[in-house]
Length: 445
Image (cartoon, rainbow, N blue to C red; front, side, top):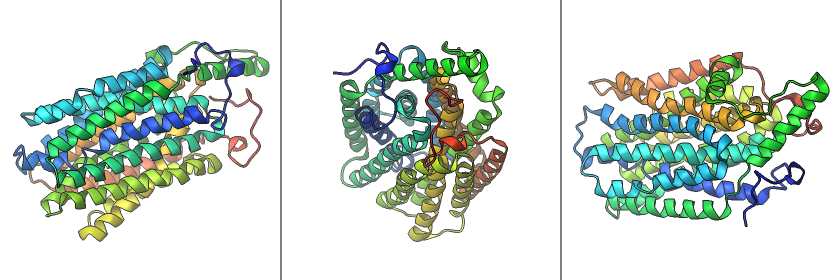
């Protein structure tokens, strides 16, 4: 039976990943299935645009519409999910995300035109915005501050392992079965499994956040004579706080947006490039799987690393490495070169991805944690759309895919340099391996 943490007294809500291992495991299983929803289509849909729907080689912008529609919808839903998480709770928001996804497999199967796939991707954006957001927020609810890097690393490892695994399986299956039938069956199984497991095992954790808010207020009353708010933030307050008022959160948000340029490139530009150069679907799947697996598995190391070293320098190093890995696709040729570039890009993404999320969790007050993460994820996933548009403009009518790759690599290097101006968000006393401050005396939630 699921425990309703909204009504459980704060004293009976243990804090930390160890005491909440069952909740944490259920959250990890959820993000695995959420990731599989994205991964199954990546190696299949871009080539399908040309082979089945006859989109000519000069219409890269139409293929980029996949990631643009996904990014815009997911960005908006991340923001909405943050507000829903504070008012309705984490569990109802996650389950709604799975319900919205139910039409997707039928759109894949029945689609008479490419526009239907764009509609399916818009629904996928809603699913990801609601469901993946809740797996992150729920983990931060139960984790100690010095465990946020570890929690994020494990969460994103599972999610992007799902992306990589589903991409490989879908690419392999599409060579044996009809591509549409593969996508339809795969999507339906993942959605039903995610919904069933979420209903049965994903427990509400908003009570943990509310208990932490009370502890923060009590600590503020003891040390500074009060002044710490405990009410839920308005949408406007949360948006302005993350986007403008807090410089570090604003810098983290711009980095999150730019790093999605890389994922957009791997999603829609690289598969088209490899397909046009004669690569088979399994070969495309291998390259994208290397990127996804290195990214996903690397976070098992990089998430806890940021709990020891702090967030700032792993984030900067990750932005620069991912930028260099992207640029390495330009001189690369053949499977060995592409695989090496994909691995280097994955290492950079592994460094930056959980670190940026953990830094936002460090910086945001507990009372607006879900809302702040929603705003950050709004800007981050809007990067899909911005990156898709900019890549389409860079590629242009000449179909110069190299120009799109160059643009993404340079943007990553510049964005990483901008992070030099951010403040470190994890105090030295809270880093793993050092004595943690007493409960209730650690500044930000």
